[in-house]
Amino acid sequence: DAGVTQSPTHLIKTRGQHVTLRCSPISGHKSVSWYQQVLGQGPQFIFQYYEKEERGRGNFPDRFSARQFPNYSSELNVNALLLGDSALYLCASSFRTGPNEQFFGPGTRLTVL
Amino acid sequence: EDQVTQSPEALRLQEGESSSLNCSYTVSGLRGLFWYRQDPGKGPEFLFTLYSAGEEKEKERLKATLTKKESFLHITAPKPEDSATYLCAVQGFSSNDYKLSFGAGTTVTVRA
Image 1: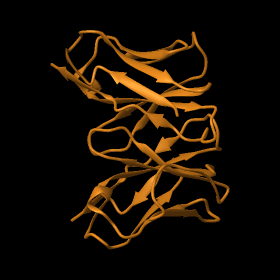
Image 2: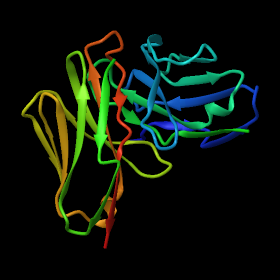
Image 3: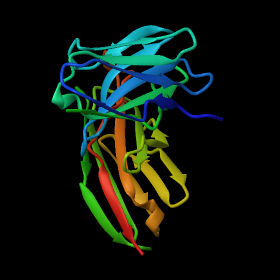
Image 4: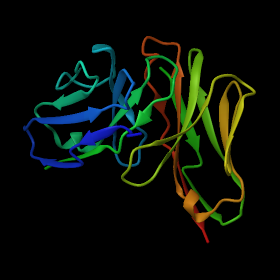
């Protein structure tokens, strides 16, 4: 069975630009979460979507937004990129929201110059 | 706010030398504690879920245990392929009870 897929694998942008990251969950999973992982730290929660509705938002500025589509895939958008946005962006899927396992994709490495 | 602290930050082991990793947590009610393994540049790989104090889970050379304040990941007779960063995460009874709060991880290096 295919796991969580993310695209692109790597991305280089300059300050002020906009970026869109994409995620396809495991088949049958209805919840997608996004995390940011800076080198040397654990992942930090950004958003969770379940059944196409936002269920939670972490402490990130409004430059970060996301959405989930009818096929449960998801996009994370970041506007007005800053150098500090350089990180590994991880997507995780789970069957439902609440206390259950989240399975992570390989991540998108974003570098902002 | 849920908090997770992992120790040590780094652990260097000789092949076959057993050891334990610690995960201390503070939550307003634990819904689940999760262990992940992460290889450099890759996404975390799910290992275990623990839900209540006293629970234990095993997988190959790894064994996870849970108390009311901390969890341990025991690595028995490790091999070089066990080298990775091990992440602990919790999910608590809060307004964001669907998010995972992660520790910074313990980087394990096993030498042959």
